[in-house]
Image 1: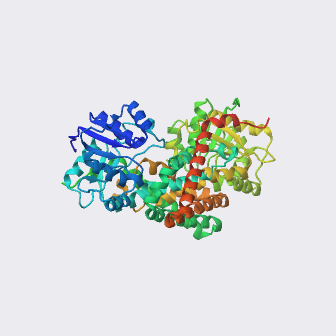
Image 2: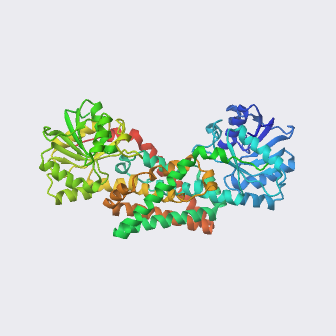
Image 3: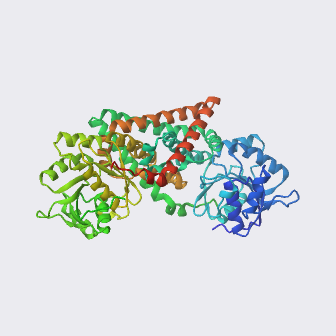
Length: 296
Length: 296
């Protein structure tokens, strides 16, 4: 759909996402240079077959992918652009508006930078948890700045396609509101549910089934990285949580009173839960294909 | 472990759980008679190979399994015992203390009744959604009344084993507190999360990934049946929800303020979420095997 003419990509940051991108690009026959502030981690990514360590005399890459924690992206981008590491730059952080603001403030060049976010992840971290197929069929948000020309956007869309993912173009602020609802707030809800079992006794654990396991799966993940993500998208996440709190407070109140109105409120929540769940499942992955549209 | 000497079981109620039990018992070579207030549903269960319709002149069953909605169990049990349908009776409803109280009030015979609850389910309902392996390796709670002798308890444990499940003996009140935490409250939390997508637009749905899908899977299920379940276990479920509400309110407040204390509170929740998740996963299914103990 977006035929890739990429020959050489540099990936800065060799965690699970950076290394998975590198593996996917290698599989597509693209040369990949790796870099990380921790040389050990780069060595592990090399062992995975993700590419070779970035060398000082390497020619500029077609695309530089910044796969470092959200709060570091603007500074890493600024330095990479100053060093002329590539023709086009993108990142993979799961918040966008704050990073764009930081990059504006840092004086980054938006004519070569396309903010991005692949909607895939693993509960495990580090290069050894990387997988070449992590992004297959998944959406990958691209949030071009008003200053970003079509050329770099199409280049990064080609990288997304080379990873097997489906580019979705949307505004940074829209992206953040959407990921607060589909990812960031659900992470905290799962954490709150799971936290109730931190000190659970054997009796409590003896009846755990697959339902609770699925409902809490996303509660896994590095707390420090997640704090960084959540703080970068604080207001949007808080707004979703406040809605969930209101729903659950009403449900608890209905259960405590159990009059006719209480039963009605419970039934209403369950029906809306059914309806929302239907929409969530309908969407994925079929509806997405027709939505993969880029400005011409 | 509990060698089954069952020859003939009657299952009252041919929904997904009743029919799945019937299929599992048929697979174990046991004769199964089926009954439901809706004859059409029995015909469907027969088509699935779950047994044959209960006939008025059938001899008493070794065990009668009551697989009707929670609020109907006591009345169905009372009538089944009055008609002498079996030697031993059990049920599969997901609450226990209220049903035991209703059965006491209805004058049921506790010397032949062992309250039970298989910890497995499907999002789909009706006999056509039944599966013979639904209970394989899953816990199945048994909550004998102080008046229940060991004999009937072992008979029902044999039925549980014949279904491939693992019997867990615990008090009815403990059972209800545990399932509130591992099943009933999580169902409402998932519903609250999913309800936010009932009116979601295409943009919101375009970035939905597997995380949200897993977190909301248990939001599916018949609202009327779930209202019945939740109302039978109202206080225990409300208590868990109130804890989740407190956690999420604090998280929302931390995100709105984002001072040093706020960051600390977020990190604390995420760390406890990790720890709880580890316990939830550790437990299942390995730890359960050694816990399958019955009084001699």
